[in-house]
Image (cartoon, rainbow, N blue to C red; front, top):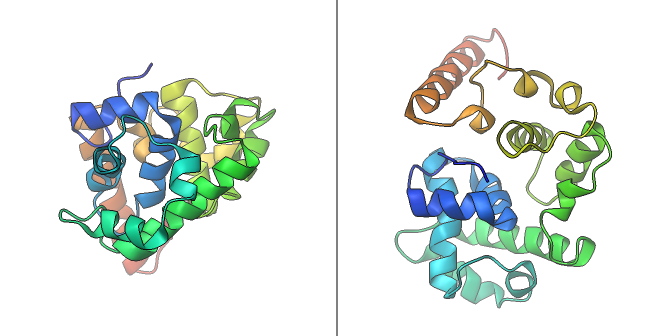
Length: 195
């Protein structure tokens, strides 16, 4: 089991390391809010649901309005609690229906890196870039390395770089990823490249 440093809160990072659905939900929420906030949210969600792990089937069938309220209760789980509660529910519905509620089955049975990236990209709320980053995170920190994973994840799969959450293992690597993202934003703003 890896020692994660995504939420920077030990209990929340422990949940991410041991609950595959929590890890997926954290990645789903990692947009338009600070990364640490996104990855602590699954821990807060378990507390608000009165559980110790996230259950895809239970969230999939949860009353949507009540789930929206859970997301909106201060501190809100996301900057856009209503839409992200709906997206989280859609993700859980897909996990419940396609993978019998077993989030780890998304990657456990993937025969190749390309298949893994495709499976992740097919999940609600996971676009191409998010799928690449998450596949790299699985490879680098969880040892999920189907054949061709580095090719399939492109630049995110490279060793010795600090481009994304896949490369964060401590406060120093977090700082390096932040620096890289700032450089990419500045370059994109200047019209030179896209992140």
